[in-house]
Image 1 (cartoon, helix red, strand yellow):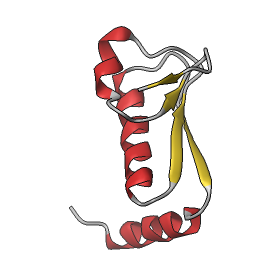
Image 2 (cartoon, rainbow, N blue to C red):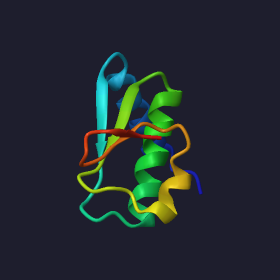
Image 3 (tube, rainbow, N blue to C red):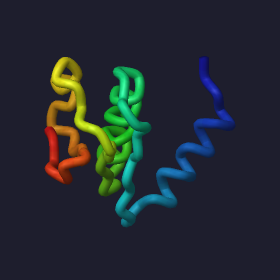
Length: 82
């Protein structure tokens, strides 16, 4: 499906974020959906030239770390993962 109105709004949001730093926040005790969504949004933003990083107050479970790749994600230890 194609949502023309939503696509136009998203394009406008991306344009408004140019030149800014963006943090994509996740919820506590992230599950795979949460981590995957945050990583995807960070990747989209970075692909558009926006300085974006993911942030989560908890560590990413070991079995989900392979999804990170080179996507920057900060966790509770304030150490960058990925």
